[in-house]
Image (cartoon, rainbow, N blue to C red):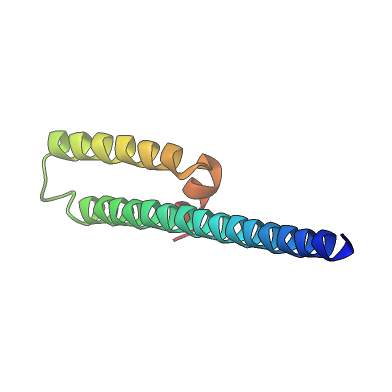
Length: 98
């Protein structure tokens, strides 16, 4: 009887260990996935900031109407990216500090 109890206890521990390991792997994967999505959003935001810089450099060559439309579009896209990032304030601060 004692042998059966030990066998059950050993199997329970290994099953518990496997569940714990699987849980840790899933947490790690979800964390890295979120990070990479955030980084993708940040890269998209950086490209939008570069578009703003381009418009400022070419403002004498472009019509005011075109610049206004483009800036509105960029602003809307940045707003969406900031919301999707999960932390709007941090996202916008990182873009501001480029």
